[in-house]
Structures are given as structure tokens and as C-alpha cells.
Length: 425
Image (tube, rainbow, N blue to C red; front, top):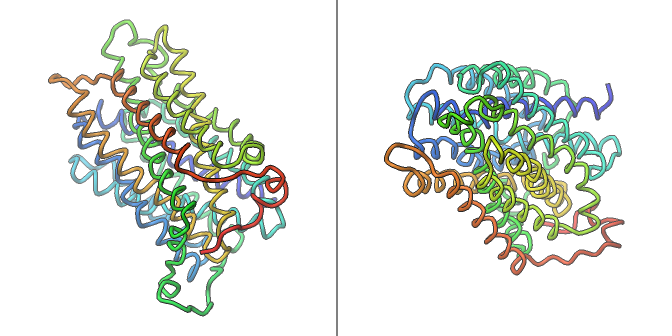
């Protein structure tokens, strides 16, 4: 079996686990459990809380002490066991802690999967910028496959979605031990400072103004990502209250409609190498921010009936919004750091996006929606919610144009801008 195929399986299962419940947990929370919106914001922030410390911590472990593929496998096995316990939880407070535990195990595997994949590709003499995006596409396919499995089995409002995710997690956990060895690159290296001794060298990257600014905007965009993940599916489910929309495909199987977002991802992932070399990281991330504005704006005016085309267009735009930020960002981090701290640096990137960004987006949005966009009967003003999110993304885009300084040189990009590290910690 070729290394590309083996990494393709890894990518597929990695995101199948997440896709089995991430988009549909809102339907389970609001429609089945009927717990509050403020509490839901806290639940969705668990991935952010875990990402604040776990990706960086596990990145340090992988850089200094334990093979990345072994650590990756153990985390998925523990996550799979935790997912099996979620259907038995009947209290929202306990639900928070169980989901948090699962996120503690899952979130670091996102950056570790990148570190393992990049290491395996480079060992084979392959180019990560050229060869990784087509592999990562299959992660999106896995996410879509999970969403379709859950929705067409009728599990969107059921706890069974967590069993589907658990099965995939356990399978990937065992599979990880068959992957190529990815030994700690800094093992046995002499440490010259306390920072080196503690394995915290990647945090020194924040002393570089350009990278610090990049990570700051990664945090703000991470908040936008959590908004669409948290509320997209339950937004369509809410149209079930309107008889004219109750029997439409979008209301009966919202996850199927929302999966168009992931289908769009597969196309935009393949376009990343071209856009990075042609326009550079600043313009690519700006494209992402403008796409977020369109994503939220289209949802504000869309509905499952005559406005379905706007919902579908918002899903198509999502591909650019997500990929041009998330995948391009990880490649930018990869090329701006030394090999000895790359796993830690990827963990730092995940900490900003899925950590602080997720906490910011989930917690604040939950409170804002509950206090300003929910009436006494519990009905949500989705039009106002999505317009508020669109305004947030627009403000970020405007600030980014003036604050993030990065000069793109096309000739340099063709040779080594996205193939060799430029900055060291």
C-alpha cells in the first residue's frame, strides 16, 4: 500500500469521527434534549478549551519524547471510549464534562495528523504543498460520509450519532500503530535555556511581529468557524415549526444540505497551491474572510423553500472560507518554522483557531443569541443572528487589510517561499 493511500485512510477517518456529530449535535441538544442556548454555547466551547492547551502540549510530547503516530493512536482510542459514554448522559452539566474530556483527546489529533502526514511525505521525498492537499481532500470526504450516514440513518436527533463516531475513532486508533514511524525530532538534543528544556520553543514565534499578527487573526477567524458549525444544522431544523417548510428536504435532512459545504471544500483544497503561489498568504486569507461575510449573509436571507439557493450558495462559499484559512494557514506555519518545532508550531496554530477562537466564538455567541436574538417563547431570530455574524467577519477583513504586513513575491514563491522554512524561533 502506497504512503499516499495510507495517509488518505488516516485523513478520511480523522474527519469522519468529527463529521458524525459536530454538525448534528445542535439538533440533539435543542430538538431532543431541549436544553438552553446559553448552555449549548458552553458545550460547543469545549473544543476550544481543550485546544487552548492540548494541541501544544501533545505537540511538545511528539517533538521531544514519543513517536507522533503512537501518541496519535492512543488519543483516538481514549476518545472512542469516551464517545461511547455520551448517550448515557442525561444532565447538561455532566454532558459538558464528558464532551470536554472527549475534546481533550480529539483536538490534539488534528495537528498530530498533519505532523504525521508531513513527516511521512517528506521521508518519501514528496512535496507537502503539492502532495498533501489531495490527501487532505479525503478528510473532507470522510466528514461528508459521516454526515450522510448520520442523517440517512435518522440519527441527527439521536444519541446514536456518538456511537458512529466512536466506532471510527477506535478503528483509527488501532490503524495509527501501523503508520510509518514519526520519531521525536528533538529527542536527545541539548537544551540551552529553560524554554528549550520545557519544550516551549514554539511560543517564541510570537515574538515575530508577522507571525504574532497571523496567529491573532487565526484566533478571530477560528471564532467564525465555530459559529457556522454550531448553528447551521439547528437553523434548518427550526423551520420545522413552519408548516410550509416542514416536509422539505432541507428540513428533513439538514445535514445533507449542509454537507454541500464539505463537498465545496474538496474543490477549494485542490486550488490552494495555485492561489498561494499566485496571490500569497495575505490575499488568500483575505479571500477567506470575504467568503465568511458571504456565508453568513446568504444564510440570513435563505430558507428551505424559495430561498434554498441562497443556503446552497452559502455552503459553496464555505469551501473557500474554511480552506483558504485553515489549510493555507497550516502550510504557512509549516514553511515559517524550523523542523525541530513544527509539531509544536502546528499545535500553537490549532490552539489559536480551535482553542481561543472556539471559546470566543462559542461562548460569546451563545450568550448574545440567548439575550438578544431569542424571544420569551424560545424562538430565535435567525435573520438577525446571521447578519450579526456577517458584520463580525466584515470587521475582521477590514482590520486584516491594514494590520497584517506580508509582501508576496511571485518569483520567490515559485522557488522556495512555500517549500523551505523562512523564520526560526
